[in-house]
View 1 (cartoon, rainbow, N blue to C red):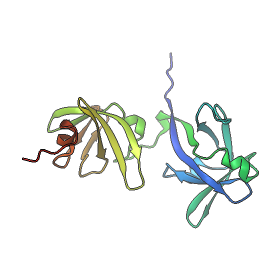
View 2: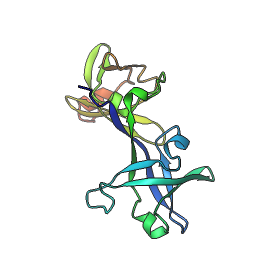
View 3: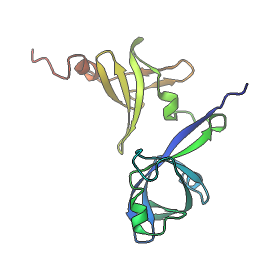
View 4: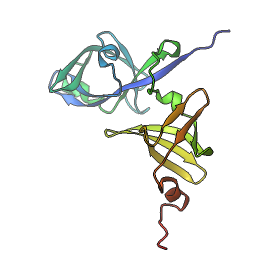
Length: 188
């Protein structure tokens, strides 16, 4: 029996309508927009169940850049009103995990989820989420005392070992201690 080795990756989010002809500004979640948004590419939509787009796919007509901002044109979306119905939709593609290129120091979210987080050989929690923010990514670490958001930078997360199922943290003083006291510092 062959098991499926496919996963869905977030490649972008539709931000706002652009112009009158159905174009939509795009927030990229990929390093290869020309590959992920080539004409004819079918994208799955992550939208609320109440959306008219729930359970549907869209097809890329063209990706353009205006003032270095990506703008997406979709088949069947011909005007601004239609484009506005797609705003805030997350765009997903299905990929074969066996065909992902290996890049040192680069990981997909699904590879990080569930990894144990260690500080000085002590397990402090596990990765439950990756938040992608403009300045940097954050790892959400679930601890016995709640969630801690850790900047995903080499200085604080020097080691990611997928094969061992763990990440090693070198957090700044107070990052986990604040969490242990409920966020209040001791005045003494």
